[in-house]
Length: 128
Image 1 (cartoon, rainbow, N blue to C red):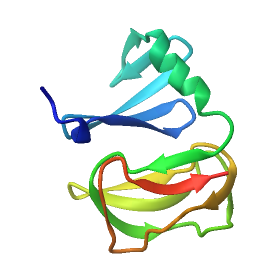
Image 2: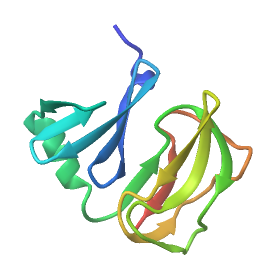
Image 3: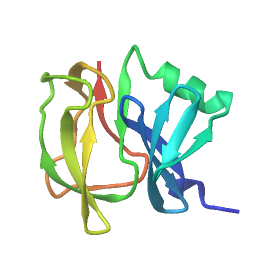
Image 4: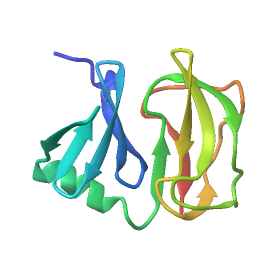
């Protein structure tokens, strides 16, 4: 059985999901009832579509898709951001990953600073 702390998914931009499976990161592009990974399309089940639809309103949570270190903060609490705008950059496995606002709104709950270690699934910021 796999360790649940090494699995998860977060919508990094509208229709683009970062999926963590057993510690490996994959980027899925979702459009309607299909998703694609490296050019291969496949059908989605209703559970994944439901999760995507729920991300549209209310407070959105920006979570770390994998363990890493914050190397740059691009927005501050109170800043207004657009969907897909970078909020902070996390380095994991020698790669820099820009954590983007899942929707337009105001940044709140941002507690990370450059040099902070973050765990997979850790809340990085709220977008209200």
